[in-house]
Length: 393
Image (cartoon, rainbow, N blue to C red; front, top):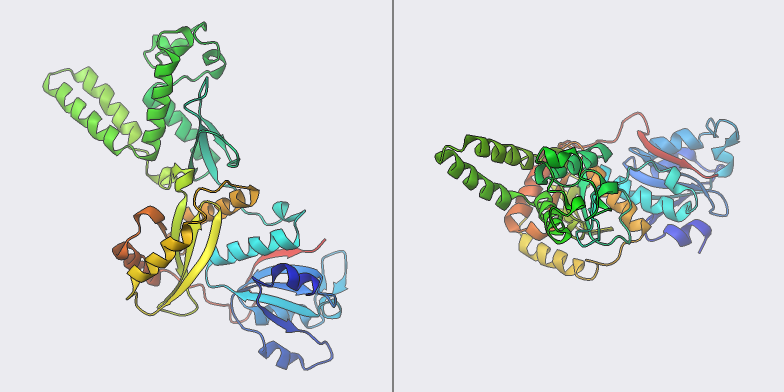
């Protein structure tokens, strides 16, 4: 196989040969006027440029007409250099980003990280069993022990989550003092009744570990903790202990922020498993992607109404058995970042993402119906609609 084909043939299945001496208009008719990720290559099939555009035909018209040059300083004419075009049709922003990333890391393994521009996924990390546990925000998801909770919308949301949990559960704010336990000197938070002071031995580290574990469980799902707190608040109010009721209400108010806004997709990393329905090539069609931690796979396409959702789900769940809970590598972490960015993108265009553990026939059918109401990104009639561009160095 040739240089490019051997690396991306499983992704860019469609190809065309460009002959500058041939009929240019006939050549253009041989490629689609649609949304693609595509790669320009030279005579030896070495990569020249990777692009994502809304209209391949218009993009090639611009680049191969003889008027466009490669880069502001190289002044190399595309028409003189390019001989092979490899492409893949895509139908959604999620599919386009995923495919673009997969090709970029293969074709440009040494440089792609600084060039593709995808945001990392932000999580918070804590190990309740550590000698001196604490929450930290992180984008490093590979090889950590303990719990990784996320994704959250950005690094500011990660910092806010840590602050919220520290305030709600009266956790230690000064890690340098905590590490001196049980011989540390308590800070002002103890005097304010906002920390039980494991640092000076007021409570045992074993008990503090339990507090950390409880706070982490609440970050994932605070429903039961809030329900119990509401019962305590009502009891305190009936007994006219209004100050106590007020403190419990403040606790409930803090926990009520969880599961919403920048925290709405938060879960433990091993539960970062999704079913995504994205636009298909035509109305009333969809593509189904299964996401298990850092693995993304296009499972199948749906055409017309969803009449066999149960069968589809059985195929889907069988396909995820082998990849769940495998160790993450850096590529997996980067894919999680791509998925997370789409989870937090605009609802009217991001497709549908369903937690894999909660998918059933009804939610699947509803997601398909909702998808049909979202905006369709039509190809541009008069331009290439360039979205991403990565040039060989």
